[in-house]
Image (cartoon, rainbow, N blue to C red):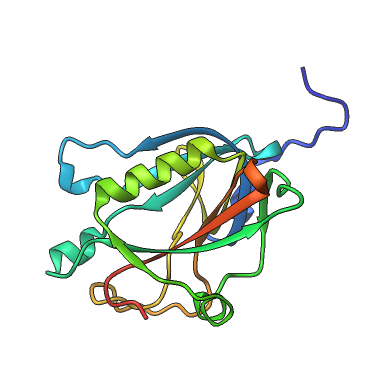
Length: 193
């Protein structure tokens, strides 16, 4: 039964967000490692969140770079971390937001980027998702068989991808109930500044 006054998004509302830079937030509904018969094609962890009136929305996090591997570069993802505390959890939903810029974040916080092999980053993301009270992701909204957010990494040119997008980076923040801590993860590929 529909709650009185509850707003449900029409397909037009959802499609208007397609390819837009957004933030998505919500309680974790599920977390899974991408599957494929060819292990070389496995390069994501998918976190589905309960995004309020949008229903379940998938946050698609890269765990390896197939483009870097094919081009002969390091396929590992480099992960940076910003720790903080929170007073209120973000409101569940999907919304347009001002883009993140890793350059500005790095100017404000000392961040060390650690290269991780695919199994290590999979384990890291699964543990954080399972422990988190809420997950927030920034990136590009897509609509396929499901709704989701991808491009959750630096968008600067890398050794394997020459296209340079400045100031529209993606990230994921995990909110934990213990001591009201939060951890924002930043992701870079080989050759990104």
